Length: 139
Image (tube, rainbow, N blue to C red; front, top):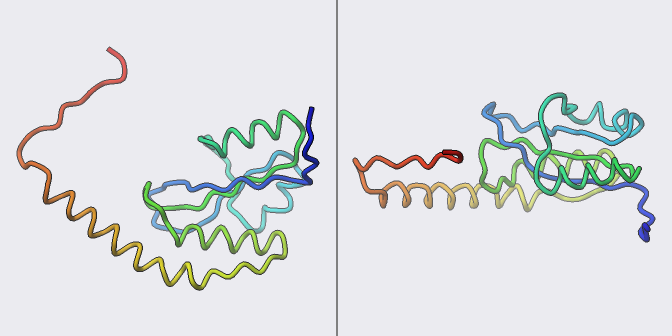
């Protein structure tokens, strides 16, 4: 039994690519919602929406709950404030919101600097010349 009468659900996540761009990919559970986001996102054509976002979209589809998934493009697995800003811009556009992103954008440089320092520390603490062992999933 469904007790929440949501008009629609928005699932937000990141998607790592190697393009270096900051696009927002979108998917939806209905043609009507897809129409609503098609000019504001790159429609997700091929692939899988994984993790909790994928689970949310699957459940919404199975239960007939209108849902949209917005995936902010990021160059890697780390937190990415710039991708978050792009997703917020799309949310603002789709739903007529006015969520400010200036503070997040100004903090992006600091976060990127800290991540860079951390990556450098990891590099210098790794033992050189010792090959890493591969642990295959099967066999």
